[in-house]
Length: 521
Length: 90
Image (cartoon, rainbow over all chains, first blue to last red; front, side):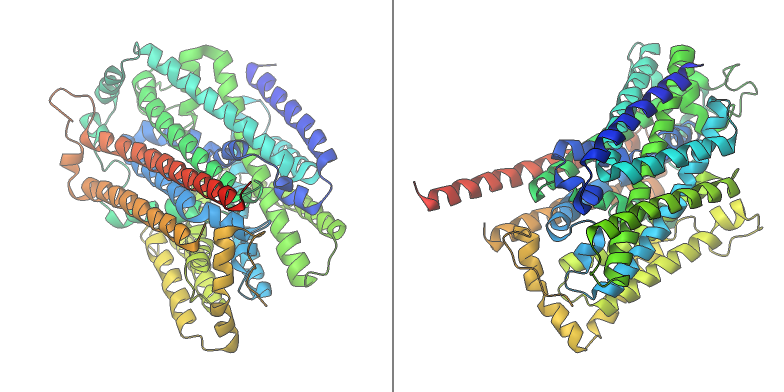
């Protein structure tokens, strides 16, 4: 048994023990969906950071830095800004307005059935491609590291994520995220430390060596490697990250696990600091990897391609600086990262199906806790089976393609509706649905006919939409349609919804205990 | 804490977000329209380009803004609690 297997099995054993402990504490709906709102701000900050630091951002961004250098900075600063948006505009108001899902906050003064149906559609549209991308990545990693085949790897991850969510709910999922975040941050720090050690902690020397050996030479630290001078793609990418992060349902629901708005603010700020630190760490490791791996006879025998592709750069770097043992550790951490992220995604889908769709849309709020929890668990199992089946079908697909869906959809659907519901008195149900659904369908359609899917995955010669990220078009379209259909809404319900904003404002400022919520209907 | 206090913290959010968005937009525009400036060495012989240092400064600014925001709102919360404690009397 190699070091990767030992580290991963230790992680799994630890998380299964936590799930067993969490299962005994998960008795109510609040425990299952929101860990009874007993998670502290610091714990939640780590858990949110864990959600944000996926395997894609660790393996993917190190690989992109290795290949393109400078242009990865677009990702890094956009991600940093996205967490500032979450902290400054979303965290506190969302915590004061909602209970279990972001739909709770949006439908406080809007039509509950329609808004919850929309929220469930968005959550499914965002979570399922994200889940498939993570499972495909897990299967691929397993093939490389654990001598299992793709299907076996996907099934192992699928079973484990279903067990975490079904038995442990939000308590287990949160602790799995906390452990994973701590492992990933410490593993990443040790990796960077070992890389810097190779250059006697001289950062300038590491950058110089990278520039000297990289095929792009001096241009490594100049813009244009990945996106050329395409302003629309760069702005779309920034908007996708900024709006997408603030619209991801599995991230938003974490703010309900803390007891009050102050802890929500604290957790968002801590997550921001951890994610920013992690992004800088990833960029520096990528630069160090260029200096260490380029033209290396073991990792890049032909001097051009890296063995296993750019996603393996982090793993090879770990091997180059720490040997087999450290390589195994980093691989296991990456695998654990995938496991934790898919557990969070599964929980968000299970929650929206049971709480938004079943309890509030189908049963009109007349279901009891036991029924709702049963539906959640069945939904988690069903999603596990669906996710594993689809991932096997998508074997060999580019995971980056699948991972572009969630951010673009979230930025164009959930984010505009959530932001306007909290900050604009004039929002009505008609406007929210028109803008939200348009943003969701338009962003999905444009991603599909864009170069990543239409050419990269489906094999057509030319894309029907020329840009990889449609957010520069779809997000403003969603905002404008929401605004237009709201201001032209003259119905009685619209008047009541606007009038209810004052009650909602009190609740956003003072919290649910001290303020009367708007009536809703 | 009155609604006016919350509106002040809202306006702080907008100011900080506006400043950070302006920085990110400036980075994007600099990189797209003046790539030779963004790729220029920070000073002669430097290993770092202006764009790389600018990006790291933006990340630091985001962290700094977040810490300032949280600290200021926590101080306001503490002041509100002490005021409400004093209003209730012994």
